Length: 584
Ligand code: ATP
Ligand code: MG
Image 1: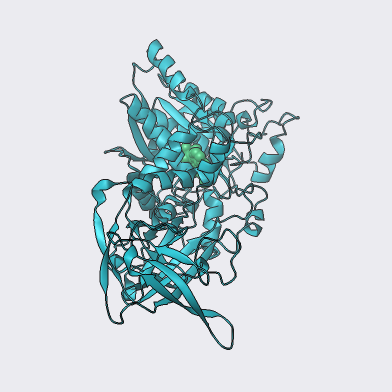
Image 2 (image 1 turned 45 degrees about the vertical axis):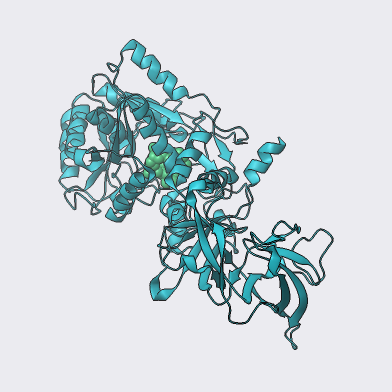
């Protein structure tokens, strides 16, 4: 590991653990983490205590992968009546910011977890971490090295060749103490010296080849300002932060597995009693989804999305704005379970979870996304009647509402075909359909734009006896359409989404910038002339509905400005996950 590298954790997210399988049977993975904890509890390792932490680096917004980690960290603690800390792992000042700290707190809370008064920062321990470093130097277990970052890399060797010892490796304790103090005092340029652990340059594990513990970096820290010009590396700060907080089980993702010997070495070298233990589980990967803060940040900075909370983003703030509920996300995390080998989860499962959650919860309303005007020629001009509509057939307590019906209504453009194929049960010339909660109508005439040939209006007749309670209310026709009253409907802007990545197997993998070429150019479609029923007039941002036959929708955060009504489609009604699993 070298200082000033792109990723100061020296890990290559997503790419490790090679084997990638598509999970077809989620939720069944046995929870090996519980087994480890049960064993510790039986042996009394930590006196029966279970204390975990969720350790985000405040360098971006949390995503659905973090939700999995949050559910595991807080969930395990809760199961054992233990505690879980929120710890900001803020050891890399050049990329971190309070904006991210605030967003992370909001998201963890929103997801339904409470760290109570245990909000910690690795930066709060800088002083103590420094003293631990002095202790390591005094024990002959760390040294100041003057090799350049390039030289350190060269000296490190490879997986097949051992490394070479640094010429500075055998400095005396006094010299090391003096140099390290002067590093801290700001006497040296950035990148000119580092503090390294003295372990084993021939270790088969590259992380054990005298890893860097401290680097010189002049960068203003969002909490400690310019107090420090040396910063601890993640691999050094993390085990010690765990120990300082009394963490027992430090649960992280698989790419840290090779770092565990270093985690243990640091705690042992300082002879800390009852050291915490690191346990790794497989990170979440989702089809069609980028799952790396660094890549997500590029989408934001390049303006490919509208921001971290763009409803196409897999961030928790994006999912929230899109209309996802914390219940659905927690349910998803539970179903995927925790396992030891990497896998890719089908995004259809996440979509299934939000449908399941909203099905019982949200009211059904009518909205016409792409309107086509229908004039009911035998309906009295100027008359309005109110028909009764149930709010949610899945929830008997949800009651009913009155919908205005009149001579002019809108239906969906694609619910009419002039020349329909055989099994088209919607409207066509001479054909009948039922209007949901109202009458059966029959298409008598099609009005077109003379010049373009575009269909602009349908002329229909209605059968007055077919309303609920009427003499022919039971008359059956094949199709039922949703509609809105032209006179009463409200204008709305509706945002429809497709997955952010075109290729379902892409999931943001591969070469650094490759994912940019996988971005779906059709991920957002904005409909500007949609019509929604008038009951949605005062729908507040964040409220959710099922638009009959069209899916689940959420009022956008921008809605209400300039009297506009803006909806995001959360998901359509077509549940590919339920379908696949039924066929299996
Ligand atoms: P990214 O690669 O997206 O930037 P990270 O691992 O660098 O993620 P951290 O802020 O360090 O982000 O993550 C905090 C915790 O969340 C860590 O314990 C990490 O292992 C876990 N985590 C991050 N991504 C995932 C994921 N996709 N699935 C499960 N856990 C994750
Ligand atoms: Mg990362």
